Image 1 (cartoon, rainbow, N blue to C red):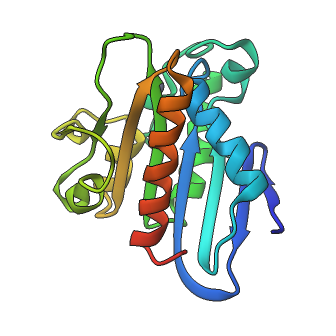
Image 2: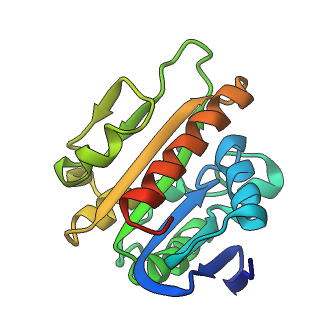
Length: 192
Ligand SMILES: [Zn+2]
């Protein structure tokens, strides 16, 4: 299936039929392989019938360096008035311009703690979707803090879900969880 790069590291795929527009992000934190590998895979293999999906690599510079971020935590920069000075603040502006076209976001993360349990972060308007993911915990109330991309969506009445897929080092297991989540997310919005 054709994909076009609309902004550096952001790809678009369109189904034949009109439908909803959603975004899937990975690598908002550059050292989190699960999301980055999932975006690789979706760019290569994802086929949709309906609607539009934006696939984005989050923090391009940090991904290159395999670091969480270069100057500031990108997931604290999703605010139109972020100052636009650091690399991450500038990148957040680009990614917000993508989110402004979308009604829902699934942002894929992973974590260091080898014993940590996977969980989702979202608000009540996304509980139905997050319940379909293979996670025991759904955490909410974070969007008030500001700067996160899930909250950026929620504060505009849209769906934003941050999924912590599991430990980085359990790559296969965390990838499977990411895949399942992407699947339910696409189905929920009738893209596939
Ligand atoms: Zn993260």
